[in-house]
Image (cartoon, rainbow, N blue to C red; front, side, top):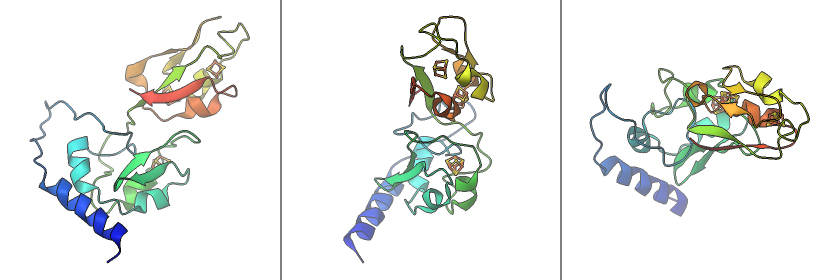
Length: 169
Ligand code: SF4
Ligand code: SF4
Ligand code: SF4
C-alpha cells in the first residue's frame, strides 16, 4: 500500500473514531472547517463519512471540487457552482446527499472597485443571481440579503471587474 493511501486510510479511521453529537432537527449546525460541496451533510457527520475518494471532484463539470486532507472541499476562485448535483449523485458514502438542501457556506463580498460604486452604472451581479439576493442602488455597493444567498458564486463570475470575492458566511 502506498504512503498516500496509507495516510488517507489513517485520516479516515481517525475521523471515524471521533465522537459525533446526536443530530436533531433543533441542533445547531456544526461550523464548516472549509467550504464543502453544496449538498454536504452536517460538518461533524461529513468529516466521518467523506473518505477522500475523489469521485465528486472527478464528476464536477466546473472543476471546483478538490480533495484536501482527505476531505472534499470547494474552491471557487476560478468558477461557480451550477448546483448540477453531479457531485452528490456519485458520492458512495452519503457525505454528499441528494436529500440535503443545497447551500455552500460562502457569500459574496463587494469591493470598492465595483463600477456601480464608482458611479458607472452596473447591475450584472444583481441580474445573475437567480435567488434575487442582491440589491443595487445608484452609486452604492451592492447589498446582499444573506438569508436568500446559497453561496453559488454566479455573481462572482458575472463581475467583469473582479469586485466580488466569495468569503466564509
Ligand atoms: S453541484 Fe455541480 S458544479 Fe456544484 S460542486 Fe457539485 S458537481 Fe460541481
Ligand atoms: S457586477 Fe461587479 S461592478 Fe457590477 S455592480 Fe456587481 S460588483 Fe459592481
Ligand atoms: S452567491 Fe449565488 S445566490 Fe448568493 S448572491 Fe451570488 S448569485 Fe446570488
